[in-house]
Image 1 (cartoon, rainbow, N blue to C red):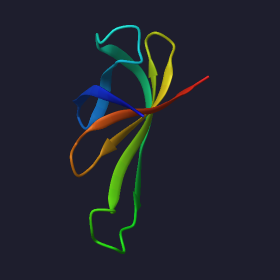
Image 2 (image 1 turned 45 degrees about the vertical axis):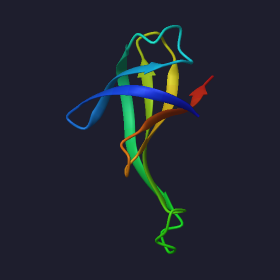
Image 3 (image 1 turned 180 degrees about the horizontal axis):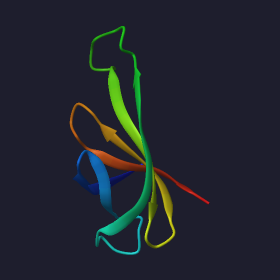
Image 4 (image 1 turned 90 degrees about the vertical axis):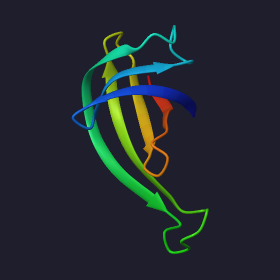
Length: 83
Protein backbone atom coordinates (compact mmCIF):
# COMPACT_ATOMS: atom_id res chain seq x y z
CA UNK A 1 0.00 0.00 0.00
CA UNK A 2 1.05 3.59 -0.69
CA UNK A 3 0.34 6.48 1.69
CA UNK A 4 -2.20 8.89 0.23
CA UNK A 5 -3.67 12.30 0.93
CA UNK A 6 -7.43 12.19 0.43
CA UNK A 7 -9.73 15.20 0.43
CA UNK A 8 -13.09 14.35 1.96
CA UNK A 9 -16.46 16.10 1.71
CA UNK A 10 -19.58 14.78 3.43
CA UNK A 11 -17.52 11.77 4.61
CA UNK A 12 -16.72 10.74 1.01
CA UNK A 13 -13.41 10.95 -0.89
CA UNK A 14 -13.46 13.72 -3.51
CA UNK A 15 -9.76 13.94 -4.48
CA UNK A 16 -6.67 11.75 -4.08
CA UNK A 17 -2.95 12.53 -4.08
CA UNK A 18 -0.41 9.72 -3.94
CA UNK A 19 3.22 9.12 -4.89
CA UNK A 20 2.04 6.34 -7.24
CA UNK A 21 0.07 8.81 -9.36
CA UNK A 22 1.76 11.00 -12.00
CA UNK A 23 2.21 13.80 -9.44
CA UNK A 24 1.37 14.58 -5.85
CA UNK A 25 -1.27 16.97 -7.21
CA UNK A 26 -4.76 15.96 -6.01
CA UNK A 27 -6.80 14.20 -8.72
CA UNK A 28 -10.58 14.54 -8.67
CA UNK A 29 -12.73 11.51 -7.84
CA UNK A 30 -15.55 11.21 -10.41
CA UNK A 31 -17.22 8.03 -9.09
CA UNK A 32 -17.03 6.13 -5.83
CA UNK A 33 -18.39 3.01 -4.17
CA UNK A 34 -18.22 2.29 -0.46
CA UNK A 35 -17.35 2.45 2.24
CA UNK A 36 -16.95 -1.19 3.15
CA UNK A 37 -16.13 -1.41 6.83
CA UNK A 38 -13.63 -4.14 7.68
CA UNK A 39 -11.89 -5.16 10.87
CA UNK A 40 -9.72 -7.89 12.24
CA UNK A 41 -8.35 -9.26 15.46
CA UNK A 42 -11.22 -7.47 17.25
CA UNK A 43 -11.44 -10.28 19.79
CA UNK A 44 -7.92 -9.53 21.09
CA UNK A 45 -8.52 -5.83 21.90
CA UNK A 46 -4.81 -5.05 21.64
CA UNK A 47 -2.37 -3.49 19.18
CA UNK A 48 -3.12 -6.19 16.59
CA UNK A 49 -6.74 -5.00 16.25
CA UNK A 50 -7.51 -3.05 13.06
CA UNK A 51 -10.52 -1.24 11.60
CA UNK A 52 -10.76 0.20 8.09
CA UNK A 53 -13.16 1.77 5.65
CA UNK A 54 -12.45 0.79 2.04
CA UNK A 55 -13.57 2.64 -1.09
CA UNK A 56 -13.31 1.98 -4.83
CA UNK A 57 -12.84 5.29 -6.63
CA UNK A 58 -12.60 6.28 -10.28
CA UNK A 59 -10.38 9.30 -10.89
CA UNK A 60 -10.83 11.89 -13.64
CA UNK A 61 -7.68 10.43 -15.25
CA UNK A 62 -9.45 7.07 -15.79
CA UNK A 63 -7.52 5.28 -13.04
CA UNK A 64 -9.57 3.16 -10.61
CA UNK A 65 -8.16 2.71 -7.10
CA UNK A 66 -9.01 0.86 -3.92
CA UNK A 67 -8.54 3.28 -1.01
CA UNK A 68 -8.42 2.34 2.66
CA UNK A 69 -8.78 4.62 5.68
CA UNK A 70 -7.57 3.47 9.08
CA UNK A 71 -10.48 4.36 11.35
CA UNK A 72 -8.23 4.73 14.40
CA UNK A 73 -5.62 7.07 12.92
CA UNK A 74 -7.59 8.53 9.97
CA UNK A 75 -4.61 7.67 7.73
CA UNK A 76 -5.38 6.88 4.07
CA UNK A 77 -3.54 4.57 1.70
CA UNK A 78 -3.91 3.30 -1.83
CA UNK A 79 -4.42 -0.44 -1.49
CA UNK A 80 -4.28 -1.16 -5.21
CA UNK A 81 -5.18 -0.19 -8.77
CA UNK A 82 -7.78 -1.90 -10.92
CA UNK A 83 -6.52 -2.69 -14.42
